[in-house]
Image (cartoon, rainbow, N blue to C red):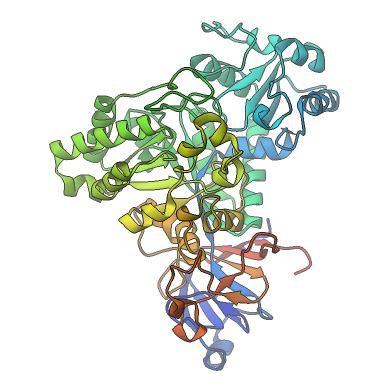
Length: 535
């Protein structure tokens, strides 16, 4: 990252500034870490002599910095620097990558990898423990599935566990308690120095993509208290993206002690579809069961009451339709006890919320729940031949991730990546929502962009940020991109809104196949945290 010691007074001019304050703005002034003015090039002359720096945008686009509303920062950094199996073409390729990584890292106490997805491989089979033992030469290895809700491990990794949970010795991917125990053992081998380097790597990568804020979703079943507090301390001292911490524990007092804004994030009500652990009302299409339930409605209600009374956000990981129903029933019970207005004001969250029905969409709106969602999931797993269809059948798969219905109902949306489940990729995320594989779930590029900028701020209770207007935090990114347009998902959008005369600020053309914008500079609170080399 390239950083400057403190906020300067800066004039940016001769570009395109995406601002609701002036849809035709070409210039902006930043002072004391806030946006001070946006307007036309002619008016910018009056500011030129009173600023510390003038940046000639040379036609570049300036937008609010993105907020990624669901990140696992340390795991992201480890994936960026470690064994990445997301591009493994088949089982043999995955095992070859394991062998190469083990040979290149002879000093690592535990080998860590991520991203395998047997559903995409011919034969659909994950590696056996014997195959992993051979590939690693008998060393400890932990390989999380792409959804991070199951893993395959070597025998030597199991030997590190103080107590091996039921089922862990079976030659199948580990889920539930067995997976949590194996994950804890694997990450316990990461030294504080390795952890800090992974966090720095992840935050630097985020900054290079125009991301100004990440919501860290930690918790005792995901990371460790030291990992969580270390990240918050690092972000407070390192020039880079802001980090907003969520700690997924049912004790809101402990979450507050750790510096979290909510006892939320990945507080698991269920698991994930890919690992057959998302909790469903009807059985999976490819398995004779309905997944796994971790919390019931009474536990959800108790947590919402405790968090609301403590002044913290509550939040839950819920993917399957039965899990989402459990959250709705629990939050509604809490509202009956505390009053609906009080629960709505707390802006409690639901992470992922992939399997929604018209009834649960309406309940989200009624209860003031924020849907923290990941459009890249649909891009990766949607469609009639994707993982969703394999697990649920085509008809149920087509109901997933109904962003348009959520927006029509007035449900606040906050977009994220769940990195390293899917990569940090903000413009790709906006594209995935605007070109959803199921057309009726598509939203406009403008709505998707808002969910990935202002939506993330609103999800933490800030309505004054995520947009470039005077008084807002000076969190912005500068982009090299092609001509700006107002892009609608289909002909249902009024023609006037896409006409340049409407005064609607334009955004890049994100039609699939076109190049995505390239980040030239990222600024957080008026401090430059990234400048692309050569710019």
